[in-house]
Each structure stands twice: as structure tokens, then as C-alpha cells.
Image (cartoon, rainbow, N blue to C red; front, side):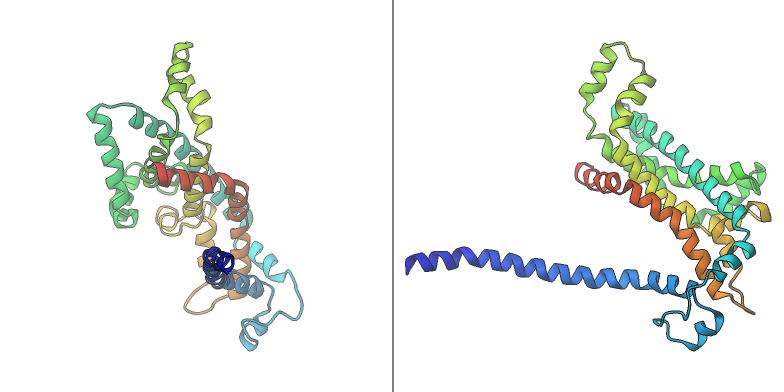
Length: 289
């Protein structure tokens, strides 16, 4: 009898844990369905004709899976140009941000002078001010410096608006880098630059992957800054071109959905490639920062 009571007492926490886990799994499954449903609808619409778009249910499958909408999207949006522009702006901006934010965060974390503490506070204040609120001064500065309607101008603005968050993220991760490794490298005769690029930078892969993914998401999907700084057709980005399919007079939704699917693929591939480092960078930075 006593043995049975002891066994029941031991089974209670196990049952409670199982019920809790089951409840969490159900909630997460429901949330996953809610998040993935719009994406599946977009993919479904990208294969439908205009007639099926208006006469059939949003959940109904197209009568035949055709690639006509993707061909129209390639022609109407000039994807060869807009896709290349978007990729160039994103890749160059993210590369510059990774290099600048890493070196800046390393200098702030290792130097104890007040100037570096002030610089860190300065970057933190930059996070609190959204760049959408600074569009007017940003445009005035860019116009006076002849940065509007230029590739390097929009890249420079993406770097300027993303560096504050990048420094904050990299600085929070910098505490996980053992300072003893840097001291050993200096004893062996390494210069400051060699110490960073051969010792510190390889240890910052998770944080850099997190920064690359988050900034790539923002730059790739940005519409406001791209539409503000670029008016030439040969310099427009993919999001600006997709917006041209929606107007007050007429809207080509099926072609737009196909273009959206095309625009999502590079970012999805980037996230899946760096997912391991992204999760590690988010968790370690949150705990150590």
C-alpha cells in the first residue's frame, strides 16, 4: 500500500509536466498555423488566374499550376534589374555593417575610457529614435551631398540607420569572448588588427550571423527609404517595383503574389543557412548582455 502511494506521488509531477508540454505544443501549433496560413495563401494566389482569384474561395486550389504569373512578374517588374539592385544594396550594406559594428563593439567593450562609454550611450540613443522619424533631415543631408539616386548613397543610408542596433547587439555578445585569448595573442606579438581578425572575429560568428539576418530582413524588405532616395527606374528595388502593381485604378494581384514569392526566397535561404548561428547569437546575447 505504501509502495503504491509512493509510486502515485512520483507519477504526479510526470503527468503534470506532460499536460503542460501538451498544452504548449497545442498553442504553438495553432500559432504556427496562423503564421503560415497567409504565406500559403500567397503561394496559392500566385498560381491562380484573375478569374479564379475573384470567383473562387481563397482556400481553393487553382485548376492548374501554371507559371504565367511568374513570367508576367519577371517582365512587368524588370526582375533582372530590381532583383540585382536589391541584392547589391543588401549584401554590401550588411557586409559593411558586420565589419563596422564588430570593430566598434570590440573597442567599446575593451576600452574603459569615458569617451567609449559615451559612444555606447550615443548608439543606444540611436536605437530609441526610429529612422522613419528622421526622413526629412536624412533626405536633406543626402541631397546636399549628392547621395540621392546613387547606389553608394542608399547603401550609406542603410549603414547609417542600422549601425546603432548592430553595435548594441555585438557589444552584448562581446562579453562571451575570453579576454585571455587576446592577451595571449598580444604576448605572441600580434598587432591590434591581427588580434581582432584572427582571434576575436571567428568567435563572433553567432552574433554576426544574427546581425546579418536581421539587417538583411530589414534592408531587403525596406520600401520607405528606397522610395525616398531612389527615383530612377534602373536603381529601384524589388519592393518599390512590387508596389507599382497596386494602384487606385487597377491592381494585378496574381502577378504581385508571384513577385512576393520570388522576393521571399533569398531571405528564406539565408535564414535556413544561418539558423544555427542565429539562434545561438540571440540566446547567448540575451543571457550575457
